[in-house]
Image (cartoon, rainbow over all chains, first blue to last red; front, side, top):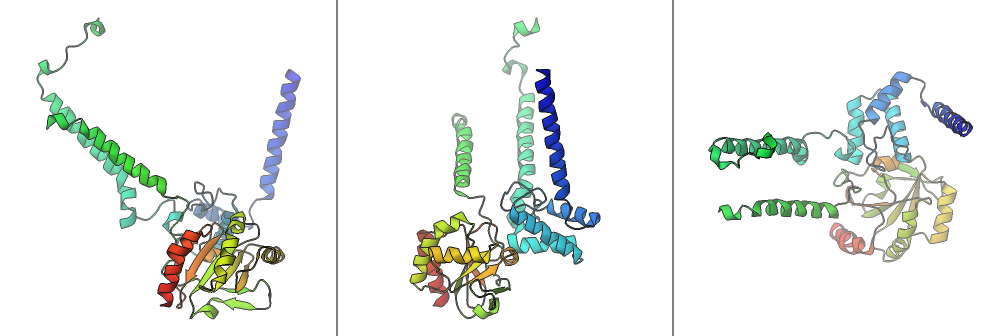
Length: 148
Length: 176
């Protein structure tokens, strides 16, 4: 039993280290780590259109790889973050942005949750105030069991 | 009035059902293209069948034309292809192919195997033009008017319904 456990453990470690080795191989296509970090920062704000719940930084879809290369190239060409974001939205729309801009079409998206909270709080407030004005005899008497 | 209060949760429930029902009909995979109503991106690509010839965006001005993005590795394109071949016979409008991220040899073999509905296919090997067109799922189909403005985009395979209800009326309107 112990032997089996040790063996599984070793295999697991081996597997992990191979994974790390593989990751190193696939590492930065450009030698400049600062540029690579900026590329990843921008990519992690962009939605991958193939697997829509991943960012372009995370996704392994071919399109995401291409778009990362595109971002890298634009950075090398000295483009600003904003120019790159504009480039992406011109092609894929606001949908690619994980933080879409505030405008009439997205107003509900941005305001909706806060509005719901306010409506809920308002309703709670009204109910509580109404209840606090009721006379004591309007409430059910407390359960004698629970007092004891 | 008080007796009707019990209807409130029911009303909220019905509204919720309406929203959820409408939500079911929406396809979150369909991203509205910001290109519609805008000039088609410029490109200059080699022809698939003759790499020495280049086709540019501006060569195609002055006509209403269709751009169909396809690839030999794309399964849904194979599904769509017979319909496209059939549609090309109707000569409704010239169809150009964008052979997206494909090996030219594989693309040409695909056309000879399944038929060629295209006036010409453009070879977009690195997918750059695809990115400019906002392509993210092949097949995609665009309709571009005489002035080079994108008027329509279909994501995924076109269907007989789409041809009948969207493409044909649009082409008539643009040509009329």
